[in-house]
Image 1: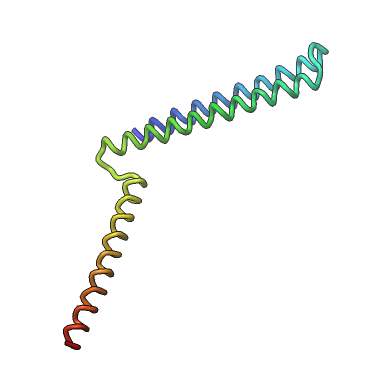
Image 2: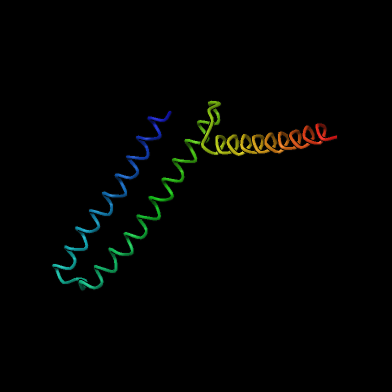
Length: 113
C-alpha cells in the first residue's frame, strides 16, 4: 500500500515537473519567434510556477492524509497518537508528584502531632 502511494506521488510529481519543463520550452519558443515578449513569458512562467507549487502542496497533503488513513485502518499509531499518549503520561506523572508531595506533608504533620 505504501509503495503504491509513494509511486503514485512520484508519478504525479513527475508529471507536474514535466508540464512545467515543457511549458518553459514552449514559452521560450514563443519568445524567440516574437509571439510574446520576454516580460510576458516571465509572467506566464511565474504564474505556472505558482500553480505547480499549489498542486504539489495539495498532492503532498493528499498523500499524507492517505498514509494516515491507511495506518489507522491497519491499526498502527500515528504521530498524533503518540503525542496524545505523551501528553497523558506527563499529566499522570505530574499528578503523582502532587500526590507524593501531599503524602510528604501529611507524614510530616503526623510526626509533629
